[in-house]
Length: 160
Image 1 (cartoon, rainbow, N blue to C red):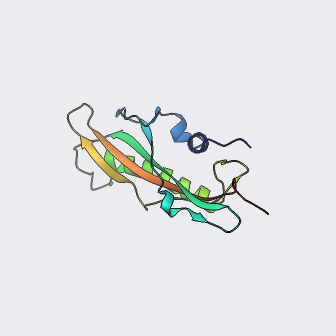
Image 2 (image 1 turned 180 degrees about the vertical axis):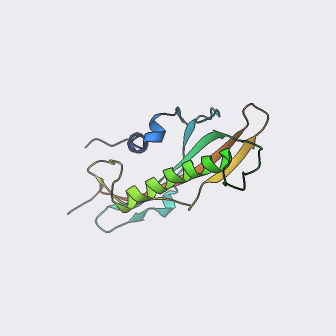
Image 3 (image 1 turned 60 degrees about the vertical axis):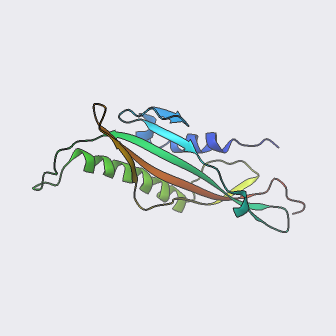
């Protein structure tokens, strides 16, 4: 049976989010410009794989997503609580909320017939700021999130 490329499956799935479709996407390459998205693959510790007696294995797939956004050094407009940085943070929070909503609705990437996804979540409640680069114009903030997908891999099942 053909093995499904999990990286491609997750990228295809995430590309269904409208705001991601309109931005440049880079894989394992950082091209920090406004509104670029970097997908950075992570190692998944094999020691965490839980084998079952039938030969199936519970596994996790993890992906780190970094979104570059231009930032401002202007203070928040207190009377209406607006600011470019605050708006960008809200936009990225919407992506995280969408990912978690898809997980709750069991709308998952397609890992193929030999894998059954049990859970898809962001590993944090809100985006992280990985860095701020003020040496370029416009200045950029790097916001990130981690997505974890837990699944059962049935490729080596001995009996059913």
